[in-house]
Figure 1 (cartoon, rainbow over the protein chains, first blue to last red):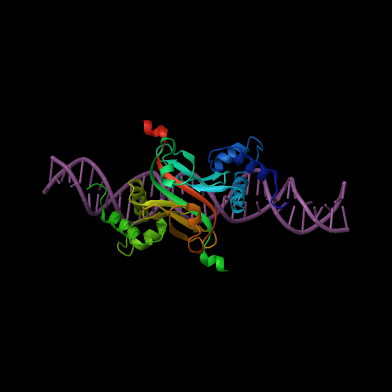
Figure 2: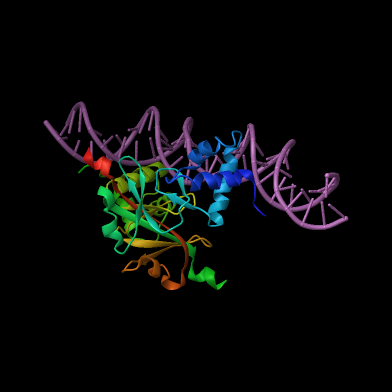
Length: 123
Length: 123
DNA sequence: TAAAAAGTAGTAACGATTACTACTTTCAAG
DNA sequence: CTTGAAAGTAGTAATCGTTACTACTTTTTA
């Protein structure tokens, strides 16, 4: 099986067993409890590879860190400008009204859809 | 008037007069045609301040750069994994079907709503 | 008009991420 | 089982977008 290593397995496992949105450094800390001498570079490389293969998602909220999400289902991320929390929110129909979920007060929102554009699809 | 400077004015103007999603370096290049000796640090500082005050939006697509958007209305950003383009798309009702806009093939999507969470609202 | 407050230019420093190298693990064929 | 090429890793050095800092200039207030 291509891409296999116990490090990659542990990284994917770590990400799927937690329901927050850790940074690479936080994934590193978590995986170190299973593989104490794992390298931070290995974590970065495998996270990028897992994003590339679509097994996990990367989330940027503009706090200077890349965050990672093991939950690939479509949902919003409510980002608190005050404490920096990233809160999951399900989407049913009206995206804007649902952003009020659980006392959250929305101010602005940015939605990014990843895929391939018209021109690139032609090639 | 607090926060005023001709540099800040020119940066906001540059961002509102273009309909793409430039990085700080690209804004810097554009503003340099008006204020040739403006400093890159000034561009970064004012962009951060304009985001803070809600006059512009920052957009992260995970390409290693922060992008900025003068259009604050709610819309999607279609990010092509192939050429890196960031394409605007209006939202009418069903967010997922609209992502197919103009030949774009969606794969994954991340939506970030910026605001204040329940706990922070109490304080 | 004068002094405090706020902003800037230019440059140095920071730090999250990436690249690199010698070494180890995986895996398919004999 | 070997075995050897392909792929992955640990550890460290380097990269580069962004931020911090300092002396100077502009703006604002009295």
